[in-house]
Length: 434
Ligand code: NDP
Image (tube, rainbow, N blue to C red; front, side, top):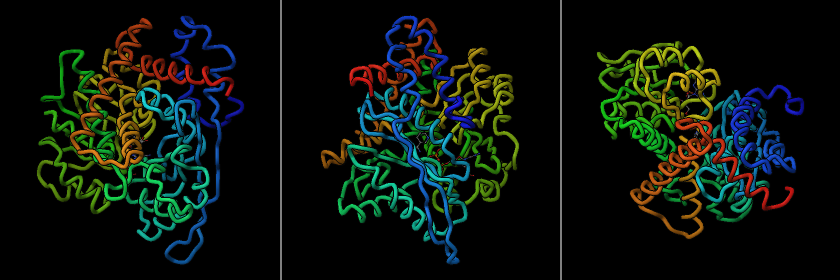
């Protein structure tokens, strides 16, 4: 704690994992040897850099860039880039730490990392976004490579930003190294189903989890927070599975539509016009209402899928959801539920899927994108999605079996933490003191 003063989210993420490890150490004391746990909590490398760029009025702006290369025992560092004004080193470290275990859970050869900047893309022109991305990559490119570190998107970074960063990487290195970034558009080395993967994956995970109780999404009322990449494709798959999505949000407020959210309209507002979710209520009069501020978790539902950001679902929200009869919670975002909220769900017997397991479909499909790049191949949507579905079901089963093996059946938090830890720990142990 002293070494990482003030890094609140990082402390929160580490504490949650360490709380799960007592049972593993009791069974396999060797995992406590050679400062293995301390090494796992310490990033291999942290890069912090200046990002200067020129705005449309000719003013020079300065942001701070980060890349935390957390753990490469299982493969090259892999994890997204986040552009949001709240970004600081503690947030990037929590995300990199979580990513290490998530990537291990996929069973694929990828290490963990995360990056970003406190740049706020909201209200910036296309030209400003491009110049920012180019400046960000001007420093970052020297730390990346297909065998070294492979970033992807996250909050504030979608296909457009990945394109600008890839263009700058190519220009600086004079290499068409498709495998250096994932989340690319299809026509320059992207994978089909990558855009959909995190949301679809979270939905496959929750569907499998509901199945353990003989239930499914069919006929369920579902609330999805956020209206970005993860939220949109979660809604799409939930609707395909027969669920009814009744609310979604952005950082200003939420919309409720009891007739079921019109996803084409949400896509038009968020993906095409890049506007606010409040527009939905203006355009779809009658059944929809917009609530500025407030908590989306006040909307009664059977399944909650928090898909916006960390700590967005508090203990108070969890109590409301339980009172309203929620049966399952699937985290599309990273650590969206506070520790108190997680405890409340678990104590109430609500099925709870933690982000590091439930949202692993994005990075897993990024690893499939790397495979396609390495073999200069391009798979069909169906082939890629069926791999994703299989991976998510396998992650679900690994978490469930691990929880059972360690005496806590149904505890997916414990199962995910232990299964992820064991894979990373085994690799680190095999590689010597690294
Ligand atoms: P996007 O930028 O596409 O969307 C983020 C959404 O969350 C937006 O609706 C945004 O609203 C809202 N949001 C962001 N910050 C806040 C905040 N502080 N308070 C309230 N709402 C907020 O990001 P993604 O959909 O890609 O990411 C969402 C979550 O999923 C993050 O936790 C991310 O780490 C995680 N994730 C993403 C993966 C991916 O493949 N993209 C993979 C695995 C996890 P607004 O527009 O108002 O900012």
